[in-house]
Length: 198
Image 1 (cartoon, one colour):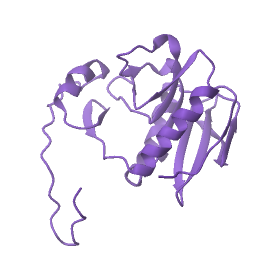
Image 2 (cartoon, rainbow, N blue to C red):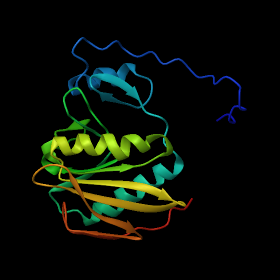
Image 3 (tube, rainbow, N blue to C red):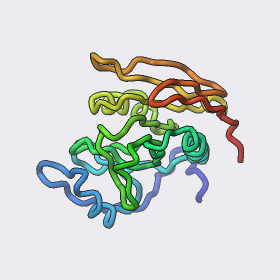
Image 4 (cartoon, helix red, strand yellow):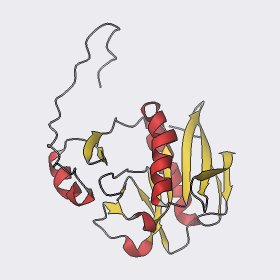
């Protein structure tokens, strides 16, 4: 890892060769081929490959914490997955943590259908504020995903904002959780959220 460039200096990067999308855009069906040729993490947005910035250490620790807290809390019919896509056609967002139906999970799972996703969790990074606060809730709401959590860093502490899909559409906030998350959906969850340490 190199030190940050001084102000005013050009930013140098490596070239990433992205495949040209077809006229109607890439879809989730193209992901296995794209993974072989795209160097780095990416998502599909309206049929185009969107590169994802590297996650911070805090982000990765929080994803790990949530995964390990939710697994023992989840009923048998659910699986806690991380960094797998949701098939929205030409858009395939990749939540940090998902709760999905066990019956659709297999060893080569890359994407899930929206109807099989019960909770999508986004852990916000400095470079994903707009995406996690505006774009993701709109996408997940339109797809009918019943529960959405946005996790933010508050002085290195975990703050979980929880939302539930309204029958008429749109997400309603159901709580702001510090230290403990207690919700009824997508299944009863009552977890103590530890400090992020390393």
